[in-house]
Image (cartoon, rainbow over all chains, first blue to last red; front, side, top):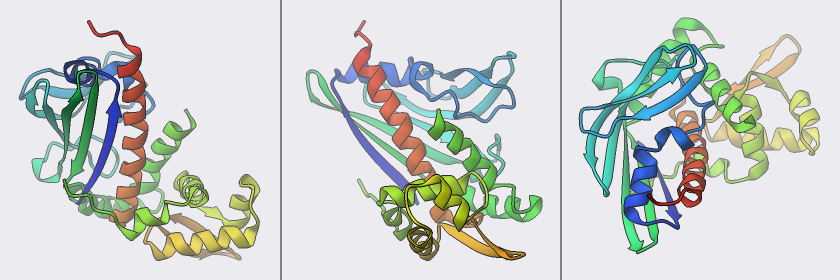
Length: 152
Length: 104
């Protein structure tokens, strides 16, 4: 299963790619994170095999996943390792993937296509977590995180 | 590029249902609590909850004399709806950043 999103921005393809990757921490909503500490910074390493992670205000680091493909200025793919408690899960079989493609529509216009796929791999896990920790666990906790975002 | 639209997301096409889903996502809520936080009547809230329930986004249960609505903890439809909102917000922030920052 997947969610797809498209946004068109008034920027060149290389600039759009650079802001998305190198500038990841400048725009990622800071309320949306998985570490126990408040997030100081979100980082997307600019190389295949690199990490996608957050650094907390206390200096702790919390992995989100791995950079599976890094192809500037066209494409970046990351894996998202999250379990039902909105925490890092190292099992690749339970990771979803986010692919972002940058398509030049003009010198200063870029279409950004995002596809978050295989997230049903989290779903099975979430069900188990929900059973394990009771009705307030799993989903409710994750969505409280979303409510924080929405209110930010 | 394939775009999968489920009934779940279709149910969130209505802004008021989206608002209700977001409130329910913060914790179990009764109809009355939702009606107090929204500019619509209790019957209208009930009607929206019915649609959200049919779409597999929320479930309800009787707790004493109250009926509480919560996000379906086992539903992938809810997960999809959640991710849909996360990416809407993230990409809006990205678009603002990319257009405000001078190319270097």
